[in-house]
Length: 131
Image (cartoon, rainbow, N blue to C red):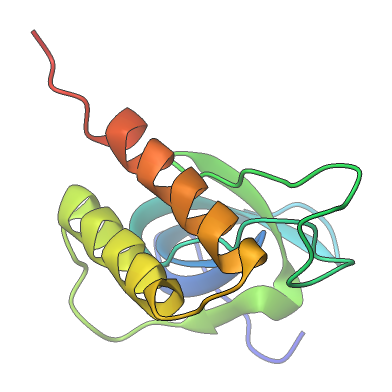
């Protein structure tokens, strides 16, 4: 572990192919720590990470972004100090999702198309209007 963090520190973390701004809560042990998600910087990648860019795999994973205030166990090596402004969670999720979709939109391959379909489905789920 290169830099110790303390309860309440604002950090940037990588978790399940996504990146987040989070509040550091505690070290669980010498390998893992618990953080609380505050914003999304990069939406997780869809599909099978062991077979990147492949559609015909046993399970094409749908990966949702971690929720606002979700407590997440992350590897200590995946935690960095974060000095920027903390974005609004919903706005940051919209931006991260739009950036991920835009990055795939120009690709003309089955994996990108399936990923975009899943991301658009997640978008409807994330932002469904509440009655």
